[in-house]
Length: 326
Length: 251
Image (cartoon, rainbow over all chains, first blue to last red; front, side, top):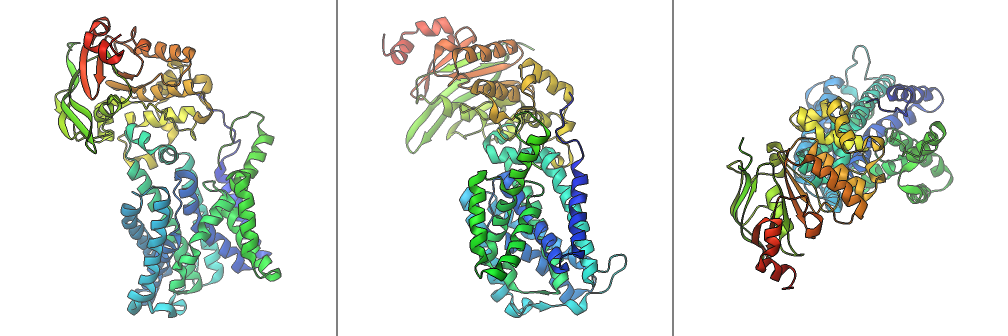
């Protein structure tokens, strides 16, 4: 049977276009801003996926970001000098942490999941700041900028190289999520878990494994962002896992549109943009973002991208079907 | 294969909830390819017993056998793999997925073992299309295929749920109050769908009202206060004085 396609072009082209445009923005806007946007977007992607596609709200995202950052930092500070291997170690660290944490946390439902993640984040912060102080140097952090080797092809010891590399990685991550969320059987199973986990079990699927894998994928993505950030700054400190930042990823996800493909990018752009602009005018920029978030939630929980795609969809097709999530 | 062979059977099933005996020593045989009803007043333990058959609960004592194999401790997922499918009293379709994707998700496990890594690698579109198309036509869902399940009426959802259970060709289909909350016209539609599948599948229907299923089922079991008090042909069971007493209050 032929499915009617409401999309007349492949979404992967849109992904490439979005990130190329964002990349070109570095000629207009400060490079640091553009880099922060892309790394934060990668970080928020996993969180947005968990909220929008599985209904799992995690207040523990900073700890997975920290797992990646510290994995990379440990390697570059104590072991080697190759930033690529550093990133790989960071991602593997994030993978391990989320696999282990997932076994315990994914069993919990709704608010218990949310708060246990927050508790896990607090434990991570405490470990990095106090318990492992011998290795992490506590609040002084680890400095390794000078240890990063220059590398061939894309030189990660330069900011330019990191920006370029981060955009390539982002395109890869978005391709992966586009496939997983909207094309694979797994993506459908995730949406099924959100609605009725028991029913999925009675169709013969292991719902726990679906949630667990989604959790691992999402948080390994966060760890990847942590690694990139560590390479860029050449420094990590426990404040990266600070519990006070736990809400940020969730808020940005909601702002942009949880579970949509470009929600994280839109959310981060607005969030960081507002932070930079408004903080120059008023001292309490959080207030403005807060009011915006409430306004967007009242509009229908779809976030900016969700609302926009509804309008776009209506103008493209004239039927009454609900818009497909980007 | 002998059509009167027992496919699913329970032996002395007992299940208690905080001292309340929901199911009390039930032994029940379900024969291959028959349509059997399980009726009883509210709170008789029908749904509990049903959940024990499908793996929702593990009984405190007693055994469940499927094709002479002990499945008492198996999880719902494992029972589906053996060929036991079910529907829910509260209609449970995936409202955030399209009708066709609901069926694809149900159907996927026919092709591949439903491991989570395999689910990542396989496209939803790769599901066997002829089978899905046939299913959509059989159940009259083809015009709704690209609608979201959440937009369907309750009757349409119930039919979608039955379609999702039947698309994997289960040997035993367990229906939990398939007519609850439906209008008369919708009930007829669901009944028609079920009748088309008679003789091809073993179907167990749990129902509150007996009148709905009299011309569909071959045999019926009556459950009262956790016990099966009568099993047999519908007319015979309805004549049973004990059934009359407990079910209609001795009228």
